[in-house]
Image (cartoon, rainbow, N blue to C red):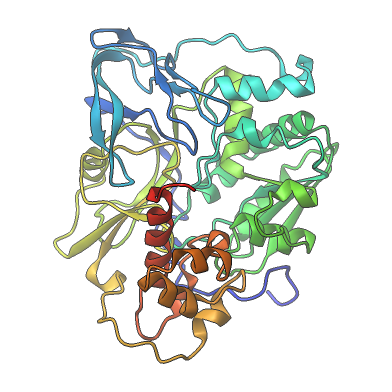
Length: 441
């Protein structure tokens, strides 16, 4: 891997991708009911368009975007709306959700949507079609994709970067997308390039996926200016700012968008689903998710309808082992711990990890020994040790203005490397939550 592009600092957690990387994705069976929160994306929750008793077909719009930074929600299975009620969300809150009883006699064919040929759509109108399909970033953040494709006029994008890094341990869903749907990824790239009015693209893939690198090279269209860039295997290589640094050698300024330096990053699965919008007319109602960890009896990669409850996923995958101690949505570094088996999988759920005691860091928390390892690991050069002290003292103004809390992306490198097992990243996440609750001056 010597000589491959990367960024400074970061960590090397055990990859554990071999559990599922060689398992082809399979279609997940439809559950008896799906729960679709109105908030499956960054931004304003969607506005429900249905009521209890309404019959919906798979792919129907059931909630419309309630603003520019919002996203449409579609029925992921045909059935009857049972209720719109508060339901447990992966973020730990109770949020308004549409509960649909799935029609077990339905063929679950998606309702056809009339979509124009993307080649015939004006560049500036492509994002509108993508918005109608409810496409969000599938790398984890779930930021509405149509917003990204409309950068500020004074910040023109010159390079589209496709993120195939998938640096989180265990997760292999993006890996499978590149192996199984490379043509769709390239078609999505064409559409996104047209929407941005540019021609150049770089696909960044960590070097621990040689088969994906080879597949993307083998299927690359001759007329497309797309470079396949192998990257050093290091966490968090797939973070937007880190990927830009590795590929372009540029740093995104504090508080700025990637477009400020001429870049835009999209996930490989997002690109594939953008292509599906125009090839099939299908909105975003399902995705490939990795179900992994030593605590699940039948790990694999599954194409799961959004709204499927966690307990249904676990049951279909053979159930949990007796020594299971934790379940996460996402990877072990940035994933969310789940406390309720009735929470549904969402658009941003790239994986479900069922972890045993041996896979979890459960040591006692010891005093800080001022070793400086957290500073050496932080990929954006913050001082986690100092930030932790400010957080514990609830000195939030200093934490933001002097220690630059807003630049922290909660990647977890500091917590992972800390020899005293101090949950540094959790301190920062709690501080961000507390700051959102404080009255604005």
